[in-house]
Length: 95
Length: 103
Length: 227
Image 1 (cartoon, each protein chain N blue to C red):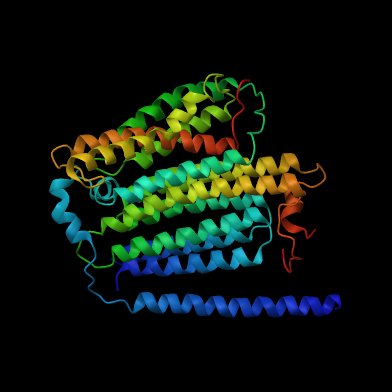
Image 2 (cartoon, rainbow over the protein chains, first blue to last red):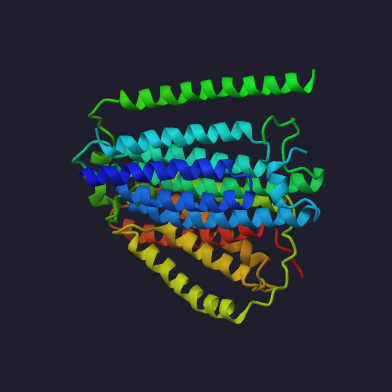
């Protein structure tokens, strides 16, 4: 019982921490990778909530496909960008 | 108290976190990430509330709604990313024009 | 306004925003904590009607039978999103990458397994976790893998056949619904003896459409025709 609460607590804190890191990270690539990790931990949370159908959907769509879409879009942004302005600076600089 | 409530509260936390990032960031890709985090928070609240009565199996209706929601979220994300890339191609900018206060 | 003033204003704005968001989170948390302990919910009605739904997984029963409208409209949303992406421009020219031998070996081995897995998820969705959306997304993942490994779309694909597969899910869903309406008078009202087979039929078409639509969304634009 205590162990379950501990697990749920750690899982919830990991979720919030990953979301915070994904949204605050100065580098867009890191942000997207953290977001994919966030989706995978979400899938664990769905299992804990006895929703295995949602867990499957989240792991395949939320983490996998959304991540692929975001990374492809980021790659296209960087291709369009001048070579002087890579995503490292685009994330932190005010234009 | 049931651990479902813990997940529901975490959902509220994710929603608020996402809303904050949505308002503060000017880069559109970050705004899209933020909207996705907000959506995850809403889904978490929905499913957690469907399973909060101990001793009974969780309600399948919110589960089905959330699966629908996840697919809608990914298609909306794809459309938003395409809009962002088009905006970038048209204006050379991938962020909103207001002068950002942070980053 | 000087730079210092502007910075001070930005800081003030940030604090006001934080306060407002904290109030919002507090209000939502209070609303959650003050919910009644016993709520009727819909699970009892779902359990009571499971016999007539034609499947044994309650989530699939809700998605494809009890609330089939939602899923039908969702197929519409997917299609509209793809139309939106296509109307924004053509897909970026795919780079002609020559995949490394390890990658092409892995893709060659993985993609058939993934397609098999999609079929399994589709079939098992009737009585265990799984279903059209999970199967469709696995199918989409295999499509994306193929695109990433430098496989080019065959020239015949972007034309009519692609569009046919894209609308297949929605089309079959609507056709089944309308046929049932002419038989029983209600849209998407499955007779319980046929429900299992009809659900599998609709789901199979939906899986194919979801998989292809999501892969097409990954391309980020309308594929070039007549290339």
